[in-house]
Image (cartoon, rainbow, N blue to C red; front, side, top):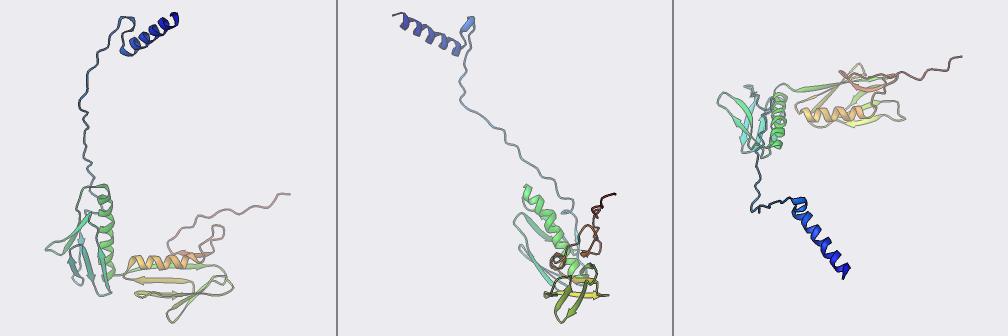
Length: 226
C-alpha cells in the first residue's frame, strides 16, 4: 500500500514538473495550427564579363538559329550550342550580346563562360591565335616531317605527334615551337599535349615550357661541409 502511494505521488510530481505547476508556477499552452516559412528570392549579380558586347568584324559571317551559333571567317568556321540558361541576341549594328535567360546561380556562371567562348570564336576566325613553346635541355630539339611533329626529349626514341586538322605548327631554331590556328581550345590542348611529354623540372629548368611560363626554381641539395 505504501509503495503504491509513493508511486502515485511520484507520477503526480512528474506531471506537475511537465506542466509547469511546480513551486506555484503555471504555464499556459497555446495551440499552433499553422507554421509559416519565409521564402526569399536569390538575386544573382550580372557577370561583368558576360554583359560586355561582342563586336563582329565585317569579314565575319554570323548565323544564329535558336540556341545554335555559327561563325565563319577568312581563317575557318566554328559552331557553338548554348545551354538553356543563356541566350544569344544579335543587334542591328552587328554586335552580339549574350544574356541570361533565367535568374539562377548556374545561369550567372554560364553567362560569363559562354560570352568568352563566343568572343574567342569571332577573334579566332578573323585573326587567329597562337601558342609558343620552348625546348630547354642538351640535345632537345624539334622538327617537322610531313604532318608529324617529331620531338627529341632525351628518351631512347623520338616522340612523334600527328598535327590535328585546322592547326599549323612551325619550328624555329629547332628549339622553339609555334602552334597556331583559329580554334583556341584546340590550340591549347595540342600545346599542352606537347608540354606533357617533358614538363620543366624545377632545379635546372630542363623540359618543354610555354614561352611566357615562369618556372619556380628550387635550390639543389648542398654537399656536407668538412
